[in-house]
Image (spheres, each protein chain N blue to C red):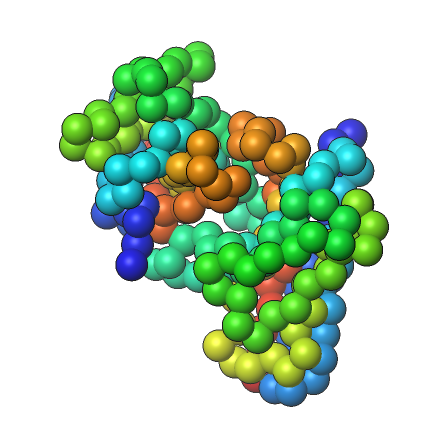
Length: 113
Length: 113
């Protein structure tokens, strides 16, 4: 079954405590990305990766890091989380240039106090 | 600035009637448009798309209309069913120049019996 998995699904943490949200896909997709969803702002892209070792900033990259060491995995790292990073996060994957078959993970709800 | 806008945050429609969700965009370079549906506690899923060379695309109960001169697209759901209750996001891409999707803010559709 085609799938994008994210862990954890829910996370409550404190300001400044480093955390990683994992993302994995089983479809051999080159393109992976991270979005955050906030009320009134829709989905905004944080970072994306067009292939292994190739990453680039999206629209709201400040405060986040990513890595792409393997094709299937694309973790999102918050080195020093702050309350304004409280949000709902989605990982997504697809073949390059094929928007109709973009698969999203189930989401990670992060609260930073 | 929001390049893709969904000005109605919510819409309530009776079962069996037509639901019309609207989306406006500002970037005249956008040439590919999509609608995604999102249920609570799940990631968005692809619903329907349209290229700028067309002005209409149908898939079962779902039809997307594109008015390039007005920079406007709409999603029609006929007939609406309670299972259609979800948040709908439109998204757009300058497909020939970038591999990036810009999402709207979302419209919450509620279909009541």
